[in-house]
Image (cartoon, rainbow, N blue to C red; front, side, top):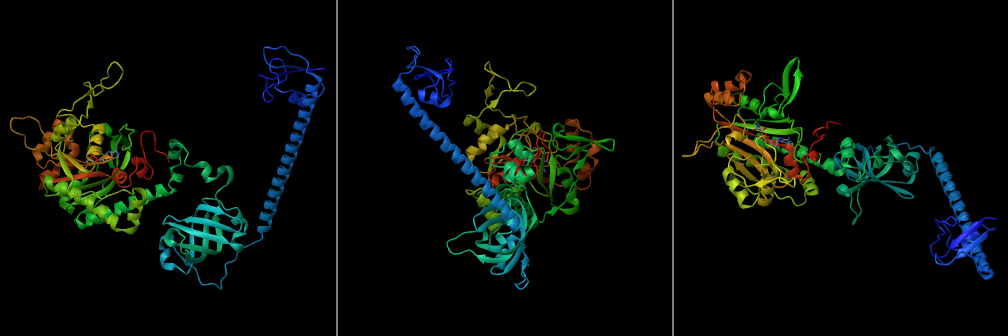
Length: 571
Ligand code: 4AD
């Protein structure tokens, strides 16, 4: 006969084994698990194991009967549930099978449906319409299915009830499936809301492309818990979301607004090449490639080409991709970005900054005046206020003073530009001095404190590109500053970089020499100064950065269709 141990103090009826090492806690449980055994019981570890008294055994048996009853009940319940579930599944399968015979045929006696995009529906209210799109949201109740349809132009509330809700496809409809829907467009009843203020009461529909359900369902591949790296892999699916698509729609409206503004300023659009054999912003950030056996690059900026257009077309602009091989993982750097650049002839430095300010403010005004782009801004950045003009202008030298007055320091660097660490491995921070590059962190802190757009201008020549026009030297100083400006925006930092250009032939040749550049590859750029030069200047604006400011996005990566950054060129 087996021996079962029970320790009423330290034993356990859930994890115990009835052995001396792992005793049970109650005699009732011991009898319930092993009916014919020798039981040894103790109160706690300080007493010895003993056989239970007759009355204890009697009580234990009663308890064991109770436990047995409980077990039976649970077993019966599980059986019943399994049966019900099976019946339910069978019933659903039967229903699905039966409903396969329900075939919808469009009623030709009804008014002809007008094919329309969701954004055009307001003009077709109380009429029969035909719309196509994706099932964006889905709520299935007993006799009625509510769908939010998405077609890229907007969202539409859809109601399926009666026969149209009984087909096999209606019962098995999934998110992200494509459908063709026909029905009456009705204004929603008072007190109810729906996108556009109307809903489609479907009288005929068909499935165009079913999206998978179950494990491969859209929401299993992508949801709010998906980690950022997988989200980046699934950018093509992320784009279907309400926020991502709103950002892209606003981006399109922004580019259209810029184009409208440039037309108003008699500035013509050109499309310069992306494949080039000259650098603009220094060799360190060039993507190099083999071009039929010759070295070539992906363009860093279209500026030099825009300059050559002035004598032909007058003031010009372009919206072109620029490429920067910067190993920067910050929230404002991309390896490929959309660069809005403009070049203007016969202007001075003050005209240039006034023009940049005008183009940005007028384009923002166009967006705010248009109900659909104003709604996108409200959705993405509810607190957005158009910036007041004129923008603050702060010279580089004054900015250095401002940083020091506000205790904003920079890491001390060795001669190779590496931060010097203290004994605890922390950067040693020092005050800024004239000649220092204002690093991204300091620049961001400054912009956030100032809290509005600010032009920083007049940077030291040694920090800037070869083509920048120099300011006359101040008496008694050897420092050389340039007619250059960066426009800084709160939350983003620099969104525009611009300058006046060297217009004098000899000065440009000297600049090539100073920078160790081969003038022969720049012959076409130099010719601008040879055949009728003029004072001119221009700028480049990072479209994703401006959009991050306008739409209050955390990173420029959200503002590009398929963003590229170091080690990311997929999808
Ligand atoms: O200041 P940058 O380098 O200026 C130029 O390229 C001039 N040649 C432009 C011109 O005068 N036509 O770049 C201009 C702007 C920056 O202010 C920033 O908004 C954006 O381009 N930009 C970037 N945006 C995203 N990712 C990057 N890696 C960027 N680098 C510059």
